[in-house]
Amino acid sequence: MPLIDVKVFKDELTDEQAKELIAKFTDAVAEVTSDKLRDVTWVVINEVKDGHWGVGGNALGLPDVKAIMVS
Image (cartoon, rainbow, N blue to C red; front, side, top):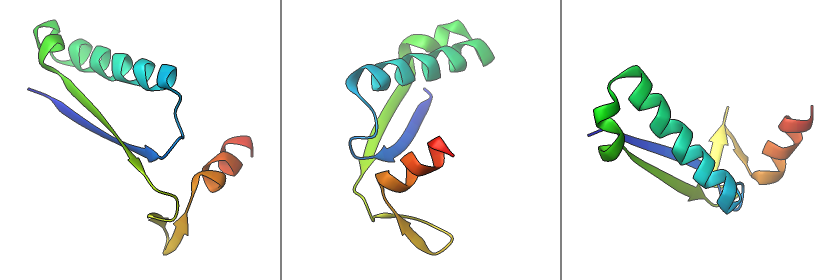
């Protein structure tokens, strides 16, 4: 069974966005492999605390992601 592990910053997604992300990842697996896998595809969204995620040696937080999104 496919298991998709998604990591986002804590409070980055609303409940609606999380539901949409789960549905779209599941749709993608079914489309690429087989629709028979739809009911056994797991999607787990893990929230990471600000400062516990780093890129290029620098700790990042949700404000950093939001700044990237608007630039």
